[in-house]
Image (tube, rainbow, N blue to C red):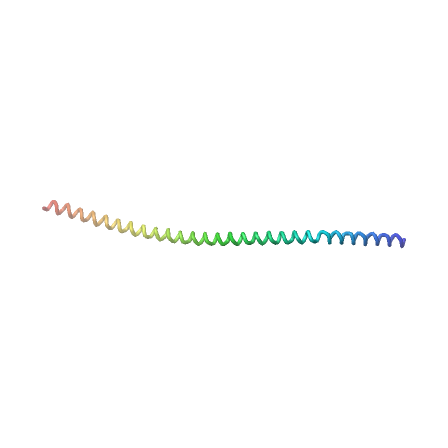
Length: 104
């Protein structure tokens, strides 16, 4: 019985040592993959940051264009009012001209 237990213990130690060697053998590959994925994550984060900067710039441009559009709309309204006033003044002047022409 002692020999069977000793043999089992030796077999288990051999398995453990074999697995330890296998792990040591693949460790550099795992480290290389870890570095590769870390770089990929960093590159992705940089792309996201660059995209965020572009989005912010576009949003700022959109706001500027909206402000310009509102300003143009206000100026357009002012010009419409001026045109209406000028048209009324002109119509009044024509009426006076007609009256004066008839009077002469």
